[in-house]
Every structure is written in structure tokens, then in C-alpha cells.
Length: 386
Image (cartoon, rainbow, N blue to C red; front, side, top):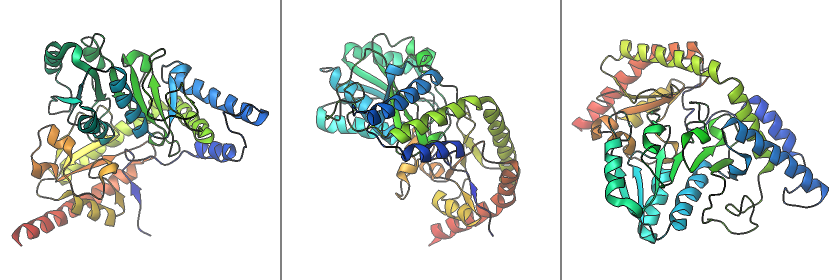
């Protein structure tokens, strides 16, 4: 049987066995957390215990954890809610290398609500240019509604330096897309200095369909959803109690094993880079590797969709970028945003590792990478001649 190796953990992680066990157990219980009878109160107690555990492990207060259905919903809630709350301010500042879960709601606000989008420049590694941010703040002043930045870039693995940014913000609220930070870097909400942060359970061994918005205590947003008023009147809707409880287990497991997991993934990444340099010496690495799980590689003279399929034929799952844009033949806006040419961006792949991967899988990758890239280059060359 052909080997199946999963190097796409930035898209989604396999659910942890401990989490799956807890999810199965909780899914069999009855009770709406908003109901007043004993069934509902019991479920509410379990949700609140999960909320407290998530908060403690992420440097937040329990009152600052607002459960959502996804990281995308959390980002939309923060960006639109902050924009509306801070009217008549119209300016939203972000980089061009944000995830679409941030860029698309900003674009929607520009088209439908009269927002003005200011693009913050980034360097070749994907780090915001602090000097440019200072210029924007000095020139736009009180017209800025919010700043939204990705904390750990999903394609590059670059982590932004928050202390430099927050030191010049003044009263301007900062929202962080921290979806890729969970399990990859030591994220602490209180220490971040942000007003809000978006999270997603399935990026850290938790279940799909559960996310959270961390929002400073006492800071309100204009809600997207109206209904029962659950979650501080900011997010209405019956809570996915089993998923939330399983999310807390995933966070607990992540915190208990963070150091050993990070060290293992770092070793795997370093070996993978060694293998690539040996087998495909003209390949280049994009990003800083702050989050070692993410490795973005340019293989010159290839088309990444063909390379992806060729790796898949060898049993290796990788990605051309964000999973949300798969199936659409578009060049990575992240790689273009850091200055790569169209041709180099379209010849790049993302390999995202996990503590679940093993050294033997990286060695197998080394056995096939030269052949895969050779075939990809032959196909690319033939396509250009036709």
C-alpha cells in the first residue's frame, strides 16, 4: 500500500484521540446551555468550565472568551463589529498578506459601508514595517477605526513583533488573526496588547466548527448576529457545547506538551530544509520560520498545482497556500505581497508539519522530492512550448 503522509496541518489538524473521546462523550448528553432546567444548567456548567480553562491557558479572563462557529466568524465579528462601533471613523489598516477571513470582510466594508482600506507595507519576511505604520497613524490620526493584523502568517510562518506595534497605537484598537498561532507559538492574549483575537479549534487538534473571539473585558462590539443574546450579546446562537468542551481539552493538551512538541517540529523542519537544499539546490525558503510548523518553498521552473498533484501521487499531502482558496487557480496574494514575482509565487508550495509527523516521513519526502520536481519542471517546460 502506498504511504500517506500529511504535510498540510496548517489547513486542519487531525482531531486528537483525547479530544475525540471527550467529544463523543459530550455529544451524547442532553441539554441546551441556555435552558433553565437541570439539563440545561448542567450543560451550562460544563461550557463555563471549558471557557475558564481556555481563558487561563491563553492569558485571558473567562469573560473575554466569546465562542463562535469558526475563526472566520471570529474575524468577521471583530472587524465589522469594531468598525461599526467606532463610527464615524472609516479607516481600516491591514497588510496585503492577511488571510481572506480578514481581507474579505474589510473589502465588504469598503464596498458596502464606505470604509477606507490603508495597506501597511511588509518586508520580504512578512513583517509589518513599523516606520510605515507610524506614518499612517500620524497622518490619519483619529480617523482610524481599527488595525487588523495576522499574528502568525498561515503561508510564511512569520510571527509579528507585537511590542513594537502596540507601543505606537495609542487608543487605536488592534485585532489579531491568531488562528495559526495556537499550538505553534506561545500566544498570550493579555501580553499581546490587542483588543481582540480570533482562534479556531481545528488548528490545534480540536473539532471542526468551533472557534472563539477573545475580546477585552468591558469592550463592546456591534454584533453581527441577533437573537438570544448569548455570548455577551455579541454572538447569538445556541452554543455547540460538545465542541466547546472538546476545544478546551485540545487547548489543555496543547499547553501540557507545548515545549516537547515545538522541539520535535523544529527538528523535523531543519531536516526537511537540509533535504530540500541537497536534492533541489536552487529551491528557496520563504518566511522566517518563527512558527516551525510552516515551511514555504519556491521550486523555480514549476507550476505549484502540478507539483501538488505529483506529490500527492507519491502519497504526500501539501498545499499551494490557504485551504480556503484551493480549487481556484489564483496566485498566492501573500507571496506577491512580500515581493515575489508572479512566476515564483506560482512555483511555491507550503508544507506544514506537526508533532504527529515523524522523521521517517521527512526522509521519505527526501527520497521523492527530486523526482517530483524534475517531473514538474518537465511538465512546466512542455506547457510553455505548446
